[in-house]
Length: 165
Ligand code: SF4
Image (cartoon, rainbow, N blue to C red; front, top):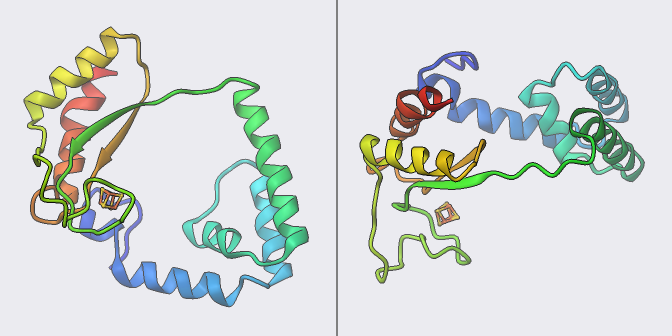
């Protein structure tokens, strides 16, 4: 059962919901009326649902895509002005079962050491990044349901990163 507000990974990452959302986006990628209504909602700056966002991502109508770009630029300016916001990447684990050819962490690469940070390692890394002046982190991890399942990622966020704020 899909529950987007749940803290349980198996409930907010729902395979069937992902497939249904992709199908919904594909079915509506040329639905001008729906796309217009989603863009009007986006203008209110109150957020979109994942299904609405999926339709915008799949949109194939050039004039709507252009409108989307203009709106996105305006919202970005309203929220951030002309600042550039920097994120420090923090790699939690380089175990990965996928095979993206551009990435050294792909599972067929036998020439690198695999490492997953412990919770104590993460505290040390976050403290060091804070001491260097970083205020925002971008968490990175390969996809590996055995070595770094989503529960490990959530534990890393909950147990360490929020405490450091
Ligand atoms: S770490 Fe990310 S980019 Fe690299 S192989 Fe895995 S899924 Fe692909």
